Amino acid sequence: ASNRQPWTFIIVRDKAIRRQVAQHAAYYFIRWAHVEEAPLLIVLCGDARNRIYRQFLHEDVGLAGGQMMLQAKALGLGTCWIGGLDRKAIAGILRLPDHLEIVGLLTLGFPAEDPPPPPRKPLSQIVHYDVYGNQANSGDATPGRVPGGLLGRLLRRLRLKIRS
Image (cartoon, rainbow, N blue to C red; front, side, top):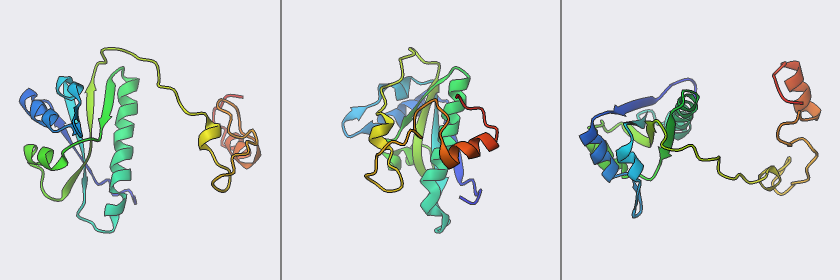
């Protein structure tokens, strides 16, 4: 928010530290084995000192992490966002100051496999027009097609490359 860039990234290369962090990367009783196996971890942190901008911290850091994931994919690397964490324990391992809050953790490395994308819900189940519950499809939300109406005119005016 307001281009404050409240993020700090801890790059964990050391195998012993990765192992310690992996012990606290769990969701209830499920441990993520690939956290310890990844050659690199990126701990995504946000500066929570400013009480006004603190409310946007997760969005800001999350968007930065998402951009890292997109760039990694473009470079042929694999990533995985880990949100199930014992943040307090990991903050202690990494010696984080109190004002830094862990938002998430990324594993980074060359993927062992290239699975197909998971199935996605159709737009007809998740898109509502104007108000919640109005799912009457006017044809504007068909993937791969130029939308009609105001949005379509705006996209054409901006000369964005979109499939027809």
